Image (cartoon, rainbow, N blue to C red; front, top):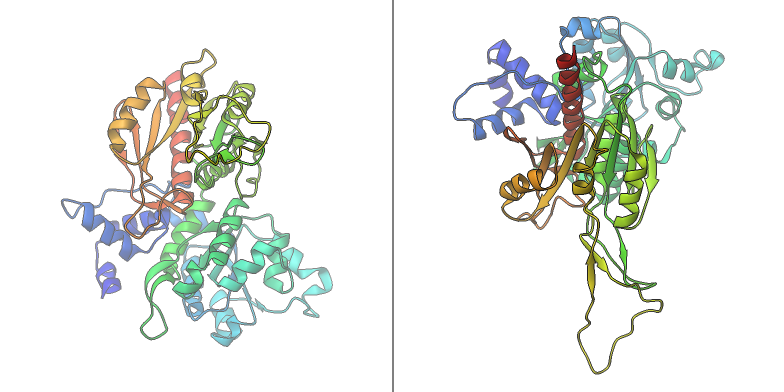
Length: 470
């Protein structure tokens, strides 16, 4: 019923829903539900895609673009047939690879008829590999779309397997890759899958979905449905649209992760920051052309592609690294920096005292990196700070923007949710952007989506600065 309702909406409303759904990583139906829940009236203003500012008609964006579609093994493979049609009607040239598992759900004959061309299925094809066909497929494309993308494919991509045609092409390509996961909810939430998603995202793989809803299995519901073809098309358009704004020539410093303050040779003080948000922001800025210096505390994440990374342990080391990296055009302070450190570090392990159940630690204040840079004579043109709060989020962020000399504060509530989960270490974030003109609440979205949206906002800032100079 929901899809019928969407289908009957005004075309302008549907276009707004389609673009914003792709931007926020969920279905058009879910986007409509979120808007209805938060809106006071049934009004749908235009929504910009955060990956890039898309201003061209869809036919111009995809016209002549070469899309390589990898259809994976999932019951959602039938949706890939509609995806082929939607891409081609917008002028894209579509080549198709089908995995062996995909052929259990749909036939190469049907996919080839819709794509108007041969479907590639075998890495060791006698006709295709005479001229190293998998390399040509990898190179002669503007974008690779994997839809549906199974848990097995995600694992193979994360491990770098090239044992089949799809894997070999993905290893050899230099084109952007968009994956549309589809799997059972239990498989999606499995720690191994989430680890693979995080690793691939750090390597520059883009994701759309999955969505929440009923599964193909009886009495199964949850997050795992592949995004609808039009939602995937919108994501493809956003990624392939020529950027209206870029950060070419801009040097941006980003801090990420926790710091560790040693107590003795064995113990240290730290926090639960995973670095996922900071690393995602660094990667998003680099994709827009910025020269990014990432100062990272100890995290279990790969260094983002195309980013210069400085690894540190303590708050003092992070401050020194940031100061050394100046001058910069902008600085985004995402790291969860320890406010205090022990005044001395014990040379030997601190032992328990048999006559006392308490220990006294004398603490000294760490450098306030955001405040030091925000009030520095070498201050970047744009200074963005993050405020991780457990109470009075907006009030504390408003005070911080003045006290620390920031231009924007990205405020988020890190208190635990009712299910026991939290922002720190998680994959989603719900933030408010606070500046001297007011507050802009953003809907809850993935940390990668927050990063893309913030990176585009930074590009918009510098575009406006350039207009004012001219």
